[in-house]
Amino acid sequence: MDDRSNFGKFILLWAGELISSIGGGLTSFGLGVYIFDKTGSAAGMALVTLLGFLPTLLFSVPAGVLADRYDRRLLMMVGDGFSALGIMYILVCMIRGDALLWQICLGVFVSATFSALLEPSFRATITDLLTKEEYSKASGLVSLAGSARYLFSPVLAGFLLGISDVKLLLIIDICTFFLTVASAAVVRKSIVVTTASERMPFLKSMKEGWDAVHGNKGVFTLVMLSAAITLFMGMFQILAEPLILAFKNAQTLGVAETVCACGMLVSGLILGILGIKRNHVRVLGISFVFAGLCMTGFGLFENMIPICVFGFGFFAALPFANNCLDYLARTNIADEVQGRAWGMIGFLSQIGYVIAYAISGIVADKLGQFTGLGVGRGSAALVRIAGICMILISVFCSISKPIKRLEGKI
Image (cartoon, rainbow, N blue to C red; front, side, top):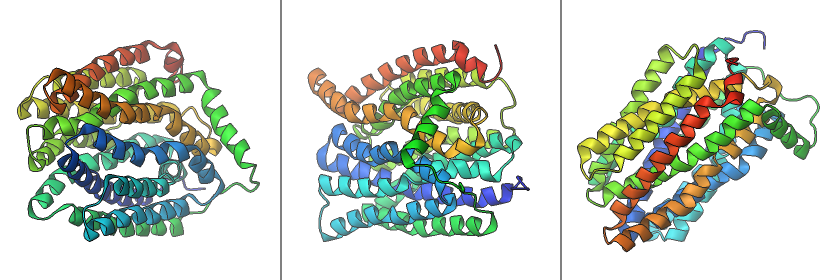
């Protein structure tokens, strides 16, 4: 492309992702409350989250290859549009009667499978649209869009559950898919489609994505440490809801999640305006250490005020960390393999989430039964442990020489 400054087009695409994030957050919140009300177990909530996340992990690498082989905007449209099918299936099951756990799991898995096409294509499209100087601001806005499912969705979902039920949340989510597909279609018409003139074999393309990440020791070290970080963050993500639902209702949970997520709003706006100009490695380490401290504090109290304070601090740290991770990886990977590389980065860095989703709910239930304090305090104990471990990993990230080399510090 001759003109690499297309920030207005990026904003349109970002707005579509913002709407999609809000809709997805409504469904996620509603299904979590629905399952906890039916089962009283953190394990059921964790299972649905795992099956909703697993396709993203499994298909992130091939989706990254597709992002380099085909029209990225078209892939985004297909992924967003067809992901509505899974949500529609859950809605139909609920209309016909109570949806069983396996039916919810199936619908979530189908929806997530198509959504897996989105992330590498969206990330690579940012590179298509923007200049290097605009990456930092774009990263802040992308983090803000991702935070919308935590910022706006919970309080809206809590309010709607007070006057209706989870079916209304699913209907709203389904409607948002049409808006996001439309925004991607408009952007697709206004920019030149760039795909490889010679398409190499699929497995070879995947190998190039691996080589792009593994061949740079700093990037690979960063990604592996990120996988460890996502393990502890995943435990927090899974256990925060049963921790609160054990002694409060869905409306209070919705307000609490929104208050906590305001931290991401504040940080996202700051980054969207100012960005981070230097010292990305240092900011990355400080952000994750602070997030770990807040996780530890979050699990100490059965009181909504300190829970909201520590939750706010945790979410405030995330955009700074994500901004630095994005910048350090993006500026050390060649443009022509961005899609493949981001697919591989997504796969490797998010393995920790799978482990967290698979074990944290079960362990919290067993710990609550063993201590006799219930699933809420069992979840709180695991959150505290996860916070301490996250601090230790973050310190190592800050002093890692390969990671420092990504920014030319040594």
